[in-house]
Length: 124
Image 1 (cartoon, rainbow, N blue to C red):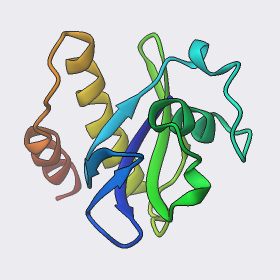
Image 2: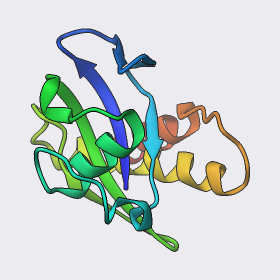
Image 3: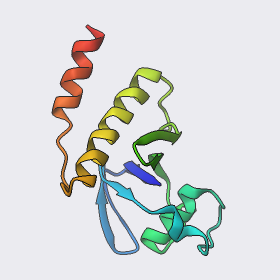
Image 4: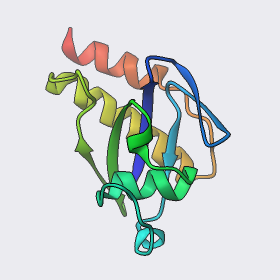
């Protein structure tokens, strides 16, 4: 399960239980680690949030996109709040895929500039 953060309580930089985050950060969690996690909501997103940060997501006003990765397959669990356009979701998933492919190769930071450039050429 992955979570890409945009805003929390209207802020681009925020903290969850002492862990500093900011808009654009993406965190990943292996689903196998979530079976014994108790959260206010039983969704994979909420369990992953609780596992990674030690607090319930319901304690914060989080705007984020959640997604799943299984092998080489990726897919959204939910759309970002306030985003109803499929083009936006496609771009978002392409950026997430690029980051996950780099992560699998041991690269922790991903520039999405090339993904965005390819996307802009496709829609022109």
